[in-house]
Picture 1 (tube, helix red, strand yellow):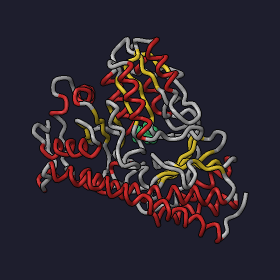
Picture 2: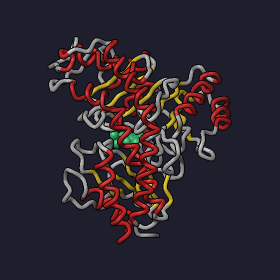
Picture 3: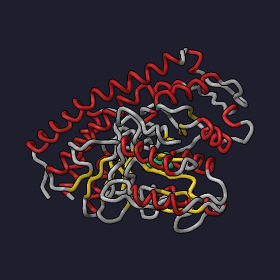
Picture 4: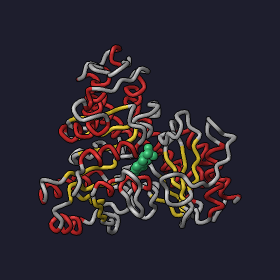
Length: 411
Ligand SMILES: *Cc1c(COP(=O)(O)O)cnc(C)c1O
């Protein structure tokens, strides 16, 4: 493993610039769609203010949901500050559309770690899907793609399967790539052809606005507002978007059957959600630039990276296999030390609830835990891969990644 040379930095910089130049057209297309959504819904200053109490007739909230649906290309959306995280949004979706006796099929292999206790994988937790008599099946990806033959066979054999879940992003899994939108849409069409009674749910976390279109042929898209679609501005929240009937079932789950999405007030108002969505295509561009810079720089240093700098991207995650826990810890500490908030904190591996291994996390974000802001996470397990994502701007991210490269060189 090499220390970092100036020539290597220059070459990495050039590769990041190529990505940023190529990304221009997608950002333009997405930005136009989002602006058109604001215009079509006639958003005015009155939509930015909040409401109190039950929130009946909260026009800002309802219009925000229509703007989101148009921006994502779905029929309807539930977009709420009351959805506390991506995991919560996914739980709302799964509990919303699965019934006792149904089976959930994850067709992208093991789901993101925090979903294990929602589903009841490995061990059961009170209130999980398994305790309601909802069973779980899993099909791993094959050679970096969905195993459509195995999915079709499972759907033919098992009439209990009601939901096929696809995780767009690699999550904390260095062994699988993220799923392109075209592949998700093609799989959704095929699943619906084979079994019109099956719903396709996409865990869209980290994927939003990385490509020109969202995987809207799925029945539900689910994500967090402190990742991509919050643009680095939203201070909390999550969304479930897709077919109207399913979104309504999720609203009944989040609030209560009967009242559904009609209630839910938020006194601080909706400006940050609108403004965050508006900025999201550009923020995502900046994050993608930092990811490409990281990929190029660390492959110059001799590390395995995924995706490679020039590969097509459908999420903002960059993994670097650092091979030793010492380098992993050094990397995360350097990212932390070069963050605007809590730069003096020293990240330590810890047993984070919902995760199977010890995890180390670097996050010095304005919105606590926001991972559209620069952040690095890693489970302490082979191959000691660090997962880096976010950055509000390219320059801030680049500077922190350079510091991480120097720290890894010394470790
Ligand atoms: C972040 C993430 C989640 C969970 O979101 P939290 O906000 O951390 O609860 C789920 N799935 C994927 C793929 C994620 O990236």
